[in-house]
Image 1 (cartoon, one colour):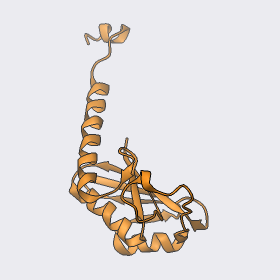
Image 2: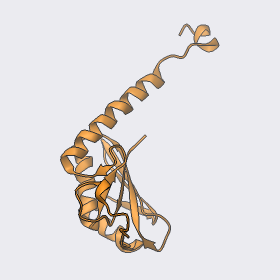
Image 3: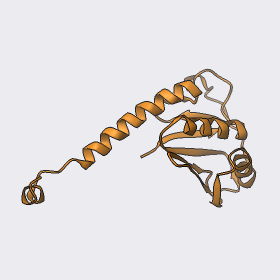
Length: 147
């Protein structure tokens, strides 16, 4: 499970709903240039696979999917773990690439404070799902082993 964002050249509008219907995003540039900007801002970013980067820290990780195309039109961020440092990493990536991100949970643009709130809601949901998955399941094996 991850908290996801999509980043690209979005217009300077307040909300996603305000994006004009005729808006056409500009490409971000060659994929290698985009990943180089990310690596310059986040030296821990590992792009051993040129289309899929990984930023791995003790308490969190961010995966960066820039795709296979030579020209990058946008990228996805998949955030796992917890802590404010993960949100700082996302903000740094967006700034380094000159993009805006859309929080896939809220459907709105990434804003540092709102993102922390959205990420917190996602973490609570994740924790609930993980706790449910760890509960003993009824059925034959549950009865057999006293669960």
